[in-house]
Each structure stands twice: as structure tokens, then as C-alpha cells.
Image (cartoon, rainbow, N blue to C red; front, side, top):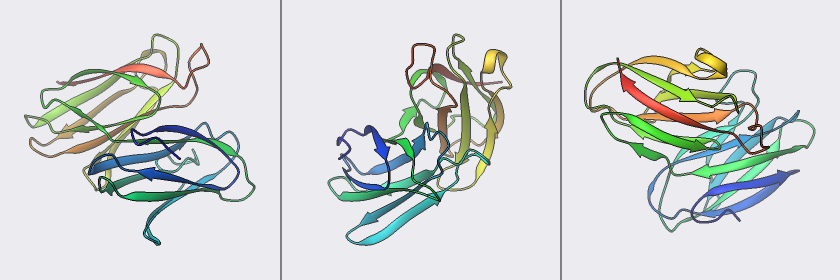
Length: 197
């Protein structure tokens, strides 16, 4: 079972885990550190599959990603499997953090999701600072819609530097993940900063 606060759980071979959403909201369900395996995910509520994914968000990465509306107090079954041979990975569930409309910086520990509703229209930059310890990437979507940008290494030292045109009052979903752990063997960490050009 994943703690009601969300978090990470190691998956070894096909399995099912239970998650009770602590509050109603938009959740990120994501696999990472999949090694050579090809993870698959599905989420069931009251016996009905409400979401499935294989091979998102990044082409060729083989990790899985679901962005889901979940209801506080409801119980969800996450079926964690594999396309092809069984393997292992880390399953991560989080309720995205809200970034203030004027932007700012936030510390990222492991794969994390964010909501951002800019207070003005224009070109905004998403940057990471990894202190040379990890390899972050970032992807941004219009809320519950299509991806509008992705970056891995456009910044210095394997950091993200992503410029996207955003509309004031429109909410966007942002994922920050890591291709490898940090030098200390952790899941990866960085500082993410969102600023308007």
C-alpha cells in the first residue's frame, strides 16, 4: 500500500498496490528507475479501470505516466506490470505542488509534479539547478490536455532550460524527473525555477 500522503514504493514483478487519496485533486502516478524493463500502469476504482498507460511521457524512455483526477477518501488499486518480461521499478504517486502565479523556486526531491497558473501571458522559462549531482528533465502540459514542451539537457551541466509560451489564468501541469540518481545514490534532486522572460 502507498501511504495516504503519497510517495514511492519498489515494484518487483507484476503486483497491485492500494492508494487512498488524501484529498480530491489531480495526481501524478509515475514509474522511474525502470532499468531494462518496460513498465505498465492501470488504475481501478470500484472494479472499473479509469486510467492506463505504457511508454509515457518520453519517447524511448519506456516509463509510464498517468495524470489523474482522484477523489479524497476513495480507494484506488494501481496495477503495476510490465510489457514483456517482468522486471522492477519504483512507483511514485504525488499530488502536484502549486507554484505561485508569479513563478519562483522550489526544491525537487525525486520525480515531482507541479501545477502552475501564470499571472501574466508571455514566454516563461523552466530551469533546474542540479549542483552537478543529477540529470533532471521536465515536461509541461496544458491542464488535462496535450504536452506543449519538453527538455532534458539544454541548460548547463545536464540541467533543464525550457522556454514555453503560457497564457494567464490557464493552469499547466509540470513534471520534473531524473534519468539517474544523484552522486549520493538518492533518487535525484534539484532546484526548479519558473520565471517570466
